[in-house]
Amino acid sequence: MVGIVIVSHSAEVAEGTKKLAQQMTPPELPLAAAGGTRDGRLGTDATLIQEAIQSVAGPDGVVVLADLGSAVLSTEMALELLPAEVRERVVLADAPLVEGAVAAAVESSLGKSLVEVKAAAEAARNLSKVS
Amino acid sequence: MPLTAQELMDMIRAIGQTLEENKAFLTELDSAIGDADHGINMAKGFHAVEEKLPDLTGKDAGTILKTVGMTLVSTVGGAAGPLYGTAFMRAGMAVGSKEVLDTRDLVRALEAAIQGIKQRGKAERGDKTMIDALEPAYEAIEKEIAAGKEAGAALAAGVAAAEAGVEYTKGIIARKGRASYLGERSIGHQDPGATSSYLILKTMAEFLSGRK
Image (cartoon, rainbow over all chains, first blue to last red; front, top):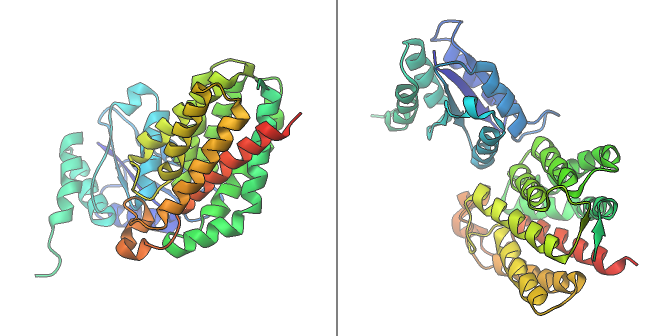
């Protein structure tokens, strides 16, 4: 299964989003949260993100979802810090965090490919909530 | 010039001290158009750097700069972490295993650092970011060095250009980072990142011209 990493400025947002995604998926789905800084501030830490990616990295790859500004910068930095053989199977989805994470988790649990899981996360931005 | 590895560490300590002194000021600037943490984050990062520096005694300039960069990446917390972290890491790569830096090394390191920030942040001049201070500063420094000036004097010209760059950020709309959410309301405020970049360059210039 494709691993999923949820990056947020807030540890609570990352952890909560992970729980929401887990509600709809089997427990063996590789899912990790990387929120906040090591000393509990709001913010992002490229080395925490790097560790989260490595904790879920497998042959099927990893999709990373990130929230505001520096979450993307820190994720890009984390990608550079990864060993090349891991990095080549990690992608950053351009997706809304919560909806994208749920969509990606469901897609991954169905055994879809890295490209399909990323696409599902990104398609979540077009889901209409108010008709 | 020349700048030994030990002096490089002293210069980095001096930068940390400047950022500590300006912690409230930078955070205040960031509270106007950002997430009100830039001063706190920079001070946190450089505190962590200061704790690492004693372990780096006897190491070459490249190792020192790369370690400073990695420390900032893992401790700053905001966008400044990967941005300044990348800057120091690229500067470290540019000087390699040298133990003493000359004027040319310094200019190469600065160029690599600024390129690193541009690539990481995908920002151009006019976006209301650190680049608005750093790029004009680099151009001024390069010009002075080409004209045969000492590193200290060249950096002083760079500091003046960076200060003008900070002024310039007051009149423009933020196109990057949290401030870009504010649109036109970001006009009238100077950019905190450009300001910290200016303060770092100013400390470097003072260090280089003030020492024996």
